[in-house]
Image 1: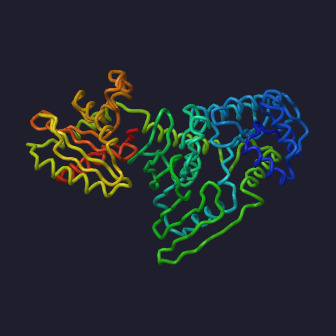
Image 2: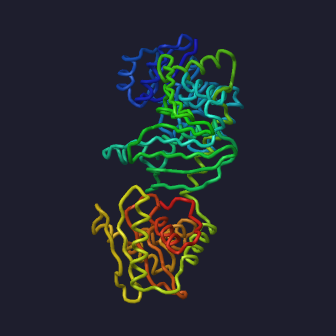
Image 3: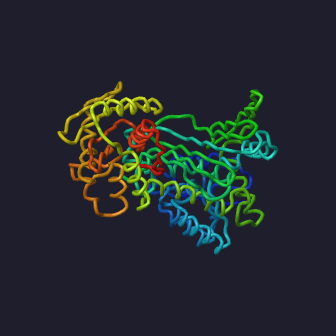
Length: 480
């Protein structure tokens, strides 16, 4: 009988304790937390022998065989290492750790102490996932070509700044939801991710929304996660002979097969007890059989999940001189031989038309630099004077740097030369203002406001390239 301890007495700990009651090979022995009052309330609902104020005290109890680590993300590594160094097996709530480096440290510790560590990646263990893998192996949709994962939800405004999900140290959509997406992608696609395009709403050290398109050795994948919007939390798997919609990819019971002849087939495989039980039962069986690594969710799997998230994160937190060169080449390629008022009309209309391909309305303004006169302005429905004011700072960064505001944003992140611009009150550093060069001089500043994730800049260059019938190299990384 495996004697379990739970580190942390929050909501997820309650769900685990309830599910553990179904496991004949394990029993809840102890719970640790910060408040005796909270622990007593937990114990009343889920009886156990011991309660400990202070996690260290519980780990010092030699009767604890395994723990469920239910603390905030940033505390996982510390307490997993402490437990394993005492010979205690660890089932750790997702994400196991914050990055690949931490994951390798944890798996090395597990091996060194000959104990079992496993990330609580519930979807891998539920019966429906096993059936999905079986159907894919049998070729129900042919060769897998593309996976689109999406988990978006909306954090209540009152929780912002209070919940660890919204704090820079261990918060963000990528860690909280992206880990589920990374697990599916990791399991089905091979090789190193090569990035096609990444968008992100990254503010004050927290990623509120991320949409990243990647290429792998045997297909492509798109990961879309957010804490600022609601959307179905599904995965779409596209193959050469059809597709599959995996419903609620973070806790699936159902998937729909879309056959190439147009027929649809719904496959439902209910949980065994609940969405927690299968992973708990698997973990207990591993311990009973003397195993120190899961064959369903291996250490290599966990390290690769973390690696995928690290790679995505680097697309909106790490920039280099090559990124600046891409933006500089855009400015050179899209220069014009002359600029008249009629050109402003053509450019403005081209941007307005291209904006219809995006999901939000925009404000468009083109200012001639010779006399600082606005020669084109258009406000889509829902845009206001605030958008025009927002443009002013971006425009100023163009005039002061001689480059697009996207270039300035990247420059402030890859060296310290312009870092003081971030909060100087004069410049607004983000994409959306673009210098139109004529004979080596800036003839006009084109400005767009309204899109998120750096798409304002993309809209401008897309429209200019289309109007001039030129092929443009898009900037693949996010612009905040």
